Image (cartoon, rainbow, N blue to C red; front, side, top):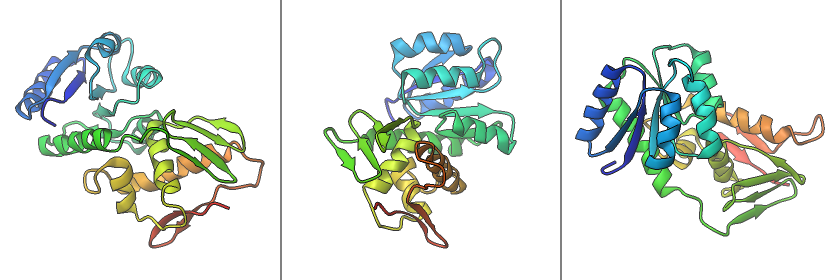
Length: 231
């Protein structure tokens, strides 16, 4: 975490000050933005390693900002919000956020989540010149491109990492903890139910490129985990 560049986006100066103090004590380099538009301007210059993004902001809110960030980069994004509703969390994860933290947050928990995302981003970058191919899909790892029966499929960075975990371990049952380690970088800092959520997202996106009734071979092995069984 030391020397990591963090962009804090929140319209509340007290929250920004609290986060700056906490992160700088952990050795991070912090930039602040008061709203989404300022954050997008800073993004080009600061090139942050991670973004902490408030949901409720005037003009360009957190959801709109996240959408534009994802058009530009796959930098890890943690959404910060006072809402604890499940639908809000699902919206954030579907929108491409890597994690979701409810205010008020525990300092140690937030630091652990940030550290897990930073560790994953630095240690699990896909190797160059790697391509996976079977009868169903082709994965160009270096360019983060996926085709299903020749049709291009767009995945979020997290969904792409999940697919890589499966195709790099074909016919092997991967437990939730294994997937949390492989995809999120930490089996303790992320809620296990996110695995089920993202496997569902991945299945639906891949199956969207298939004829009606045809499914992708990502199996749920009850009581154990998930398995990709290519034809």
